[in-house]
Length: 157
Image 1 (tube, rainbow, N blue to C red):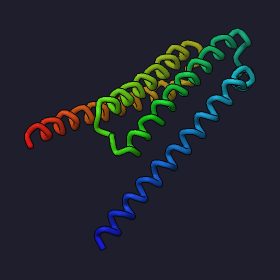
Image 2: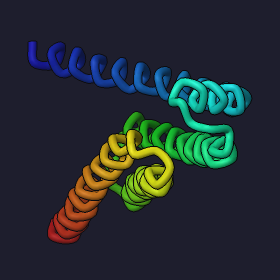
Image 3: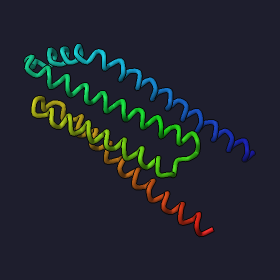
Image 4: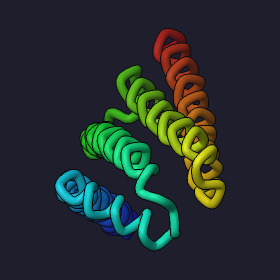
């Protein structure tokens, strides 16, 4: 009975990882597609927000930078999911992937914080991205400590 329960749990975990990978690939496809529509998106953003066309270059730059950083983050996330699928979570590469993800969040937070000089209503984006970056940094620190403890235990036995 216990073996079948463990097997079901392992199957659920594998299914969850596969679903996460599919969603991550879908997000990557959306971001790549968005790269082609950024001028149109920025025109609509400016039109709907009531700003003048003077802001167009800043908006386009912000959207391109954020989208490219988002693509980097998606790639890092996909690599992390592969590590989880291989049961190799607690190693230095996973820590580096989490570090990179947090840097991506902080970069997006910085870009949108700078954009707040033009549009104060985007304040929620740098706040959310900065908070997510902070959470990822804490998780990265937990992983580093877990690796340290694991290495100590490996040498003790």
